[in-house]
Length: 135
Image (tube, rainbow, N blue to C red):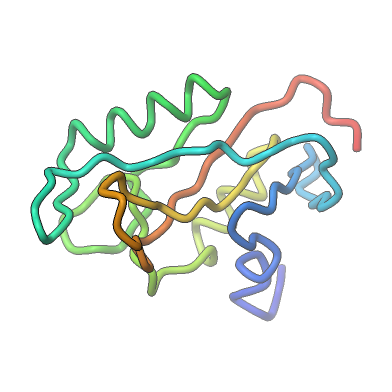
């Protein structure tokens, strides 16, 4: 397929919506489509602990905007949620899944609700199916 394991990661800059067509090709000029605007709730402690109910609310907010958040793709030990660690990237099996699943895709930076400078909290991937695959 691609020699560069980071090829899709390079295309999927945070907030840059792409279109995956039925044949697996990528369209990058997706005018008029914005990434979901989301804020992650926290437990309000110094560690910004994210609990299951915070992830569920985050996913529900995305769903209300027409997007589904991917879960279960992080390689973090025993974690199957939606938060990808900053050291992870869109490659390997995840890249294959994305290119085999038509629709709109976007990487979104996760920011927290505490009003502080959120820094690098991690990221998530959102998908929105399309009925019309024209580009």
